[in-house]
Image (cartoon, rainbow, N blue to C red):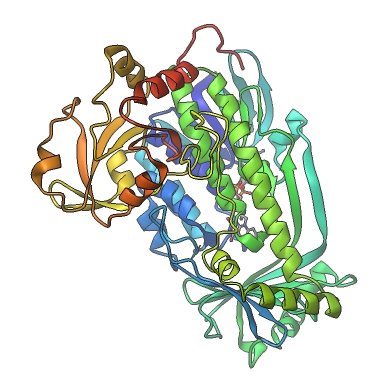
Length: 537
Ligand SMILES: Cc1cc2nc3c(=O)[nH]c(=O)nc-3n(C[C@H](O)[C@H](O)[C@H](O)COP(=O)(O)OP(=O)(O)OC[C@H]3O[C@@H](n4cnc5c(N)ncnc54)[C@H](O)[C@@H]3O)c2cc1C
């Protein structure tokens, strides 16, 4: 017998498990499989960023994941003499969370998998391997171990860096593999007092040293040509590597050690027919920016609401095509950033290391550069200039369209303080700043607006008195909240608009005014609605 689901996910790593939780939240029948019976526990991601935490917030799991994480951790670069070359400590929380947080990947994966139990329409099958995949105009057939067959409307391949699905589809993985290997060592009973992540640009042997939750520490050491990966994992060789960094390496409590090769690679396309690649299946990058998993979570945050809208017959298949347009350029930018950080960290020629140190010190004398580094402004932020957005005029610098909407704290009419997304809910939202966003819509425009089933929110300035609250809104279900820390006023003022349509992934689809909202939603509804003519993959 063939099982039927709306979406099947291959791979229950962090990316697949996040996708399954998102689809569960949107009410989509989902099957998620993994060939392993348990969670992979070798040393992997330790850095979780604000955008990922925002997705976990949508899932209702952010607080639980943060229970075993350290928030707001600085990142420092040191030279061989231990002098600080750059100190990155971005304390702003534009998206509602700190930008640099340190966690343990297996623990977060456990929370994500446990979260799936909340959804009767989501099934997790462990110890189940995908053997074959075929697609036709109406769907995808997956042949699984145990002679099990599943038919799905769409498939997310979150099956990791070696992605069997990517291989079966014949999608090339473009880019390069770095010649140097690195050994990663995780220890318990942290022997150092250094509560940050440190990239040591030491030409004698570049290394990374990071404080982790649960009193743990990670070291990553570059291996030189001729150093055999297996031999370097022997206890005496691990002790040799640690000798310069701890008083007595023989008492360091090594939990796990593993050798990795780094890649800067990206799939030639992120989608094929009805199958999407996500996470490491779509892109591989060195770990220096801590962005491999975060980039994968961005993929599925972008993808899952689109799939939900399509399989529920609210949107046309063409919405699926925007996934590749919107995600691939940004994933490439993240690979480039990670590769550049590796180039800063790893020179082993003293002259080159000297020049790098001089450049970093000189550049940091300029206040603008210092701020750029300190506030982590070098991290590429997605900006969808095409895809599911209504582009604004020629001056795109200030436009909020295609960018992630900010997330300040707001206060409800009952005095409760919430992060804005908890007011917006998991789907679309229309937000008016000091205005009723729907005030000027015609009946036809209101009908177009309903395509998105948005939550309507009116934000009023902090302590505005009763005037705004008393003003009646066109939709009686409009939620009124206060901009309690006065963060949204400057955001809207700078952009000269007072209404935004925010997508479920928190990106701004349209930025407008009450009188122009109608044409913006009519435009978007045209891109979104099921035409009835093209449901092909
Ligand atoms: C040393 C190191 C440090 C890192 N640090 C960071 C960091 O700080 N921040 C960060 O964001 N990222 C970091 N990363 C990267 C991060 O760990 C990965 O990007 C992340 O694990 C990718 O998640 P994924 O779900 O895409 O793939 P995976 O976690 O690899 O999961 C893929 C799953 O697919 C399953 N699978 C494969 N084939 C099949 C099949 N045929 N049938 C069924 N199941 C299948 C596998 O069993 C696996 O469970 C680091 C990586 C390393 C190695």
